[in-house]
Image 1 (cartoon, helix red, strand yellow):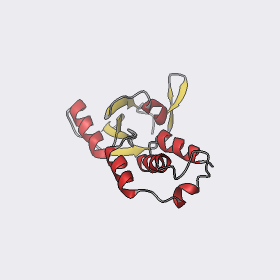
Image 2: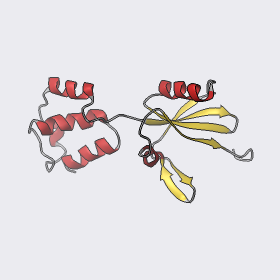
Image 3: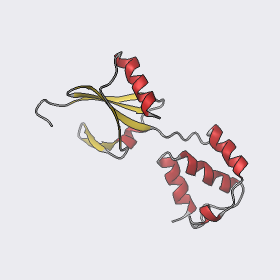
Length: 144
């Protein structure tokens, strides 16, 4: 595996720590994209520069998650947010009540949208601002 692969994955899967870490090493010339990925962990990083870049989030990488917030016995709101608290606050602002629970889902969980199979990660690409309501799911009373 190459540095390029790890860097692309860090951005694709919204891993800000790793993305900024690699970015700093690349910008200082300590590694290049065609190096073996093991070189990432052997290279000496400028800690001050890294902390600044990571703190300011210069790459704009945010770890957005998907949360299921239970509205009733058979209704669930799915919200994209950076943390559980943000999801709950957003839910409250939309529905003017507290959810019964709030559970984080896997971003690679798949579901049918119309006739197309999509993951939450793919749906996330359609969202420009978080927190955001992805959809409300109403299950049939027969489903368990």
